[in-house]
Image (spheres, rainbow, N blue to C red):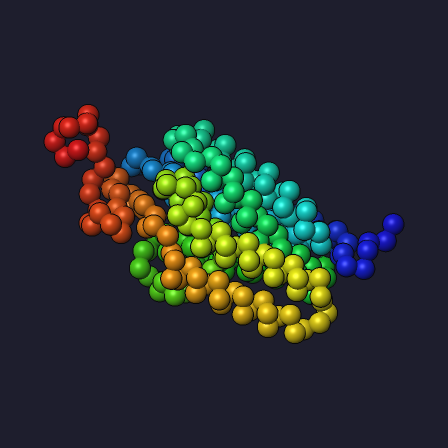
Length: 264
């Protein structure tokens, strides 16, 4: 049976589906395992947000672009996300403080990423997954840079990245007070996803792209003005783990003794 006019056929390229597995599951899982094997105590929960965001983006966007179907990208990304969360828990991440907030953040992020992949499939046919790979790689590199070298990238650049929006929403659900305080990032993800699907539906008309880019810039401005709470970050050295946030000043050694002991 021939695909509907608004759908693209499944990609027959083995490379496309191997890339989905690599970007959506293998690479994020390896990152978690490397952190778990670090010589210092590893606060995995404090870096799980960016890792999960990249995994969801890799699985959802590339799969939707390769398949030409939104639901395939969403389904594979949800499976990858559940697997990565399970792996993080097995590696010692504390119980989820806000499971419903985390589920909401994951679902909204997956929808947004898969929508972009579906647009790439419409606009570039069986080459759309290559565009998705470059987009995922670029945003993943920026997230990794921001995580490894805080302050190296300007804030105005980070607020333009949907992967950063997803990272903030997920990280807030993991270590903060839930995604309600990071509502701007969820609104931005949902808004860009909806507008992207509209552009894909109206393809090959080009004028909807103006609407999409306008929405992207407007929603980025929303995130800029309503960024939510600072996300805890971890700095791991050879001898000790230190934690810091934008509110509590300089990093300090993590407490290893009983509550109330010196330094705790």
